[in-house]
Each structure stands twice: as structure tokens, then as C-alpha cells.
Image 1: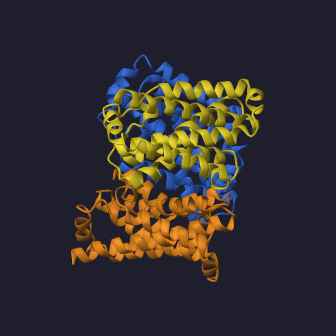
Image 2: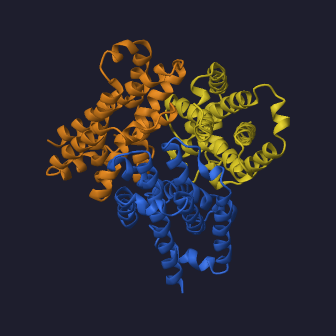
Length: 186
Length: 186
Length: 186
């Protein structure tokens, strides 16, 4: 049961990493960046939110630096966005959808991790939000756009979904937190 | 005497938090953000400077994460800016004035805290400056403006005022530092 | 031998600090900033990359805060850029060249330091890259430009040069790492 909860958080984190890296990579391709720039943008978009959260709760080095799964996945997703941007473009408003999905997922797992590090529930929710919106904001700043997350309504819905996920999991949340603590490098 | 010095720093920090949150929230309202965006901008503007300082001196988790006073105050100020922007607009150049006030206050308290963590005086002054200008710079970047603090003259005056405050308090500064250390979560 | 390796890294770090501070200061002068803004920009450009790396590997306080050499050098370079921008402008495309030089140097020393803190080689190379490109990206964002490093080809060459430098030094890299560990405040 506990292992399943930990595995779920891990899986959700990888999903969030992949969609944010795709979103960042696609933004780079659209701005005419070369492969180097696209990979950097994919990496930063995927890592910024969780990185800030980890530093703020004292989980240093952050999960992105301590492990290699997320790094490899983000680079692969960036490469995919560089080679096959057309596939991504076929989705209507792909960045918006990717962001919303990533935001909801990261908001949930970010809140979980902050709780596992003993942060109070309200602040944990705020840090979950930081995890969810941080990457997209950095991506938008680096590509010279106003951060969409501060304007678009869909994000409020996604954030709410993330919060509901965590709230729904709050019953067994204390168990999940205990599961996470030894695997804090998540 | 010592308790009074600690209380003064705490009060100044709350003043700085409130004015920066008002300034960030107002900037969000002006750009047509919804409530979510306005609250995020209020929070980031109030927390960024002190957050960077705390991470750099090793005060992790930062005061903003460890306590809840500043968080609650920033959210309340953001809400106020969202509901009553006209009240703020009546002040001439409100953002500039709020920034200058917040900068002076945060520069002073930021220097104090850095000194309390054993940072050398010159670097403590630099970190005080970071505390003072960080929030406004992030706010300007997120709203797509050149960071006003790097151009406007009033800031130099405010920064100087903050430095003078700290320098003036340097005589009893060692005492203040000792007062702060146990209450490092400030 | 070991001392020489440590001294080389130190010297390269100071070179990188100087060129990034010049680049940041020059960018500030071109945008019409006053002395305060120019110094801030010089400092941020020189410190951001290494600061992020140090926080991510847990080297807190970062080298920039713990020591004073880099700080003094960055301020001096910023002052130089403020007083003698014409000297810098005589160089063709000075910012690009300064950035490329700084990137190559910082990528090499950043990789070294991350290795010395026990980070895996691939992630160390990524963090070296962060060290190299972080400062220039922050400078570009603060002056309202798209981050040149994500577009310009010369950077790929410079980054490659940095990587080759580190790879070439990998044979005696383990020794260099041991040299660095006691002097981790570098």
C-alpha cells in the first residue's frame, strides 16, 4: 500500500517532467532556437519548479540533481520536441494543455513532498503551487512572453485539480509522507 | 533592550512584506491578471528578496516558509490590491513609493540577518541590498518591464537610507544579532 | 601538482568572474542605467551561474558569499565598464566574446566543483553548463532581451571547449577534486 503510494508519486513526477520538457522544448523550437537552446529550455522548464521547492524545504541536492531519471527523461523529451515539433503542434493549443497537465501533477506531488519534509499544510500547498507553476513561468520569461499561468483561466482549474488530488489523498497522506521520507531523493 | 531590537526587526519585516505585496498585487491588477495571478505576484514580490538571501546564507527553510505571518500578510495585501486598486492608485506613483519604502526596510533587516549568520559586513550589506531589490526585480520581469530599480534614482536614496539605518544601529548591532540568532526563523 | 590544479581553477574562476561582470556592466551602460544599476547587473551576471550551482550541490553559503575576491573583482569590473565603456566597445561584439570566454571557463570550473561534491559526471557537466550560461541568461532577462545563449552558435563552441577542457583534465580530475574538497569555499 505504502509502496504503491510512493510509486504513484514517482510516476506522476515523471509524467510532469515529460510534459513540461515537451512544452519547454516546443517553445524553444517556435522561437527558432538551435538544439542546444531547445534542450536547455526543456530542462529548465521541467526542473525549475521542483528545484525551487526542494531548495526551499532543504532537500538539497534537489531530486533533479541527485537522480538521473528526470534528467534523462527531460533531455529525451526536449530532443523529441526538436525533431518532431509537428506532432506536438497537431494538438490544439499544445503548450497550454501540457502546462495544465504538468501543473496539476506537480502541484499534487510537490505538496506531498513538502508535507513529507514537515512543512505546514498551508505552506505545503503553496509550495505545491510553486512546483506546478515555476517551470512554465521561467520558460515564458526566457522566451520573452508574459507568464501565461498568471493570465489563463485553465490554470486555476488545473491547480484546483491538483489540490483536490492531494486533499483526496490526505486521508492516507500521512502514510504516503512516511513512505517518501526514506526515498527523499525522489 | 534586546527584545526591543528583535521586535523592531520583526515589525520592519512585516512592513516590508506588506508594501511589496501591495506593489506586486497592484502590478498584477494593472496587467489585467485574475485573482490567482494577482495573489501569486503579490507573494513572489514579497518573498523573493528575503528568500534568495536566506538560501544564500544557509537559513533553510527561509523565514517565509518556516513561519506563516509573512505568508498570511502577503496574501491579505494581495487580496486588498485586487479588490481596492483604486485606493492604491490615488497615491501618486504608488509602486515607486511602495518599492522605495520596502527597499529601505528590507535592506536594513536583510543586512541585520546576514550579519547574524556570520556573513562579513560588506557581503551582509550586499545581501541586504539583494533582500531589498530582489522582489521588485522579479515582479518587473514577470510583468514584462525593465526592472525599475536599476533605472530610477529614488532607489539609490532608499537603499542609502536602509544602509544608514543599519550603520546607525551598528553600535548595538552585535546585540541585535545575538537576539536574532535564536529567533533565526524570523 | 595538486596545488597547481587548485590554483588553476581559482584563476579560471576569477577570469570568468571578471569577463561576466564586464559583460553585465556594459549591458547596463548601454541601457542607460546609473552606477547603481550597472554595479548590480555586473554583480548578478558574474554571480548567478555559480550561485545556482552552489545551492544545487549544497555548497552553502556559495563561494561568492563566503569569500570576497570574486565580489571585489566583480564590483571593480562593473566600475570599469561604467567609466570606460568605450574601451570595451572597441572590441567587435564585445558582449558575445566576453560571454563565450566566460562560458567556457565557468563550464570547466563548474564541472570540476560539482564533481568534487560527489555529483555524477553527467549531472556535473550539466551543472557546469548552468554555471556557464546562468549569468548571461539572467543579464539578458533583466535587460529585456531574449537570452542570447539560447540562440547564438558561438556558445555551443565555447561550451564544447569547456567540456573538452574538463574531459582533458579528467585523467588527473580525481586529484583535482581532492584538492578542491578542503578548499570547497572556492
